[in-house]
Length: 638
Image (cartoon, rainbow, N blue to C red; front, side):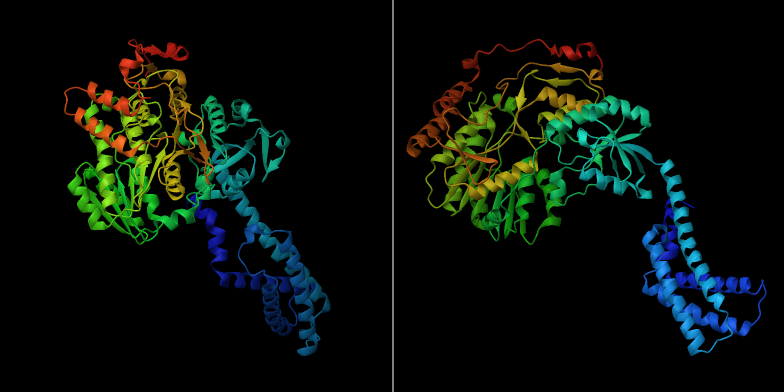
């Protein structure tokens, strides 16, 4: 017999078999009457006809009064003081009714008065005893099950911890909480659902040794990134596995509940606050309209498609060059159409005829332009393609969208557009200038600028994770290199909000929080993988061509203005004379026919004076590999 079956036995017998409850309680009542009769007549059975006739009446009365006082359920293993009080009430009422009906209605004057009292006392004792025995049995089974469960200590002693402890109390949970830790001094020594608060988070290493804990559960869904980093460092020192409850944003969105433990992820350590979106504003713009997403198979594009479907567009057109990417996107979206018509087309945004045909065929009203080359080192050695795809692909698409009477055009920009030191960032800045300067002509053009998306394909985090998995040294370009990060759902939600509130020509910048050192992220990844920092080599390879130590979100001359969303800022100062900008773009196009990247870079600098390419920077590149002194002793261990 399995442990789960044993745990469910009382429920199977009592809750799901009410007939058994009635029969069993009738048996207890009859047994009480019989035993009271034996006591009255010195263990003999005279007047048997009176006894049996009265027994039938008594059983009926008892079952009716037990039902009236809610004592016919089968949850006896949850018996409490309130049940005992109800038993006293039911037995008292039943005894009075039995006495009146039996003696005066049916005329059973030969029935001994003392038996009325003895039977009532015995019935009350047996009914209460049966429930108490059931509870003792179940508690013993639970104790036996808990002795084989994982002993865990909880980090946190707040409301979430109370909910977690309540969930862990179920025998099937497989966990036995032995204590909590928290940094709130007022909670020291108190008990939460019977589980004591043992100490502070910094004492975790000592406490787990004293309590023989098997695992740690982090029960602080609202923890900031800084708090989570401190907590995971404390957990790491114990050399025990640790899990966390979902983040507050996941719980608010209904995607998880507090009892669904999972591994700590890197985005937990970033500690981004839940995004508050004006859902109605976005829905008003998107509902019942045709929306086109270019670069739909990419990290941002695919999430854009998923979130746009939540606002009930009439049609969603997903465009990308990657056939394979579109295939997998289609698999993921078809189950969440939300009434929209889904269209998937393989297309190159630089192919003007193909794009004209598609925009006219589907009568596009809104375009989210996420198609672009994004990898800095790759574009440094493919300057012509970067300009062709990122700049002139946008120019062509913008003109076609205007011809097709498109109402809104949204560009996905990058923080690398600010004081760019690489071609990719410079092309993004040119794209911002194009949208800011483009005549309205009935089409609203908005640029949305933000930093790195955590875990996007080919970005630093997946590369480091792959190196960890392959037991390789983690390669970082510089010990002080920093980047802005946000998780994909948050970035896309804010893009949609920016689209809803942006005016023509606006450059809207998402709040990225504080920039994070890549080295710190690498160390966090090491801890989350269950390894110790000194077991993994971190190797510094030097800044790559076009790479900056720190990215920026705003130019110095840009005026930063608030918007109706606190996590979105508006900038100005990017508008150019449209005729002059078009002339510069034609010169840039002409420079692409000249051999080499130098003429193209020079024309880019004319358009974006802040652009600094290698000849200007004259930055001494790091040719030797450097190892973090903290990890120097670990060199050679991967």
